[in-house]
Image (cartoon, rainbow, N blue to C red; front, side):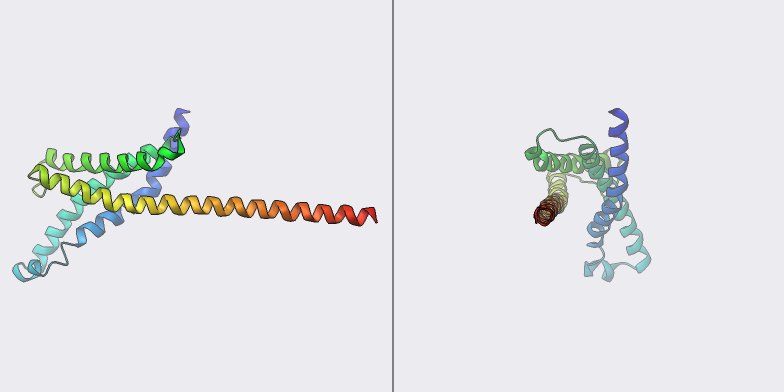
Length: 169
């Protein structure tokens, strides 16, 4: 059981880390689209600032992924609790990532509780929305596969029935 959970955790991390890097890139890119940044600083300073922001967003995204991967590595005992548990894992990961930035003394870390809450809410809403889309999509794929299996079973039963009719003649 323990080995299976750790294998599931590693598999989930491998699948989710590229997605976390993409989230961090999206969140950090808003810095590059602010016109005042380009007006007031040279390109090299802007890009160094963006790299720092990207690093911070990668750290928070990695914390979110770690929380979601840990949740995904074990079976959810009640399937209807999967979405709330995922939302809680995302919020916990975002909170721990923001807290880690503050603990490390990162200059761009949240300086007030309100700013920290705003960042956690932003991460939670964005990531939670994408997680809900993914969960709904995977559930739809599962339903389509089940419908396809039923259709194939019906076709096989029809073939057997026709074969028996032919033998009866």
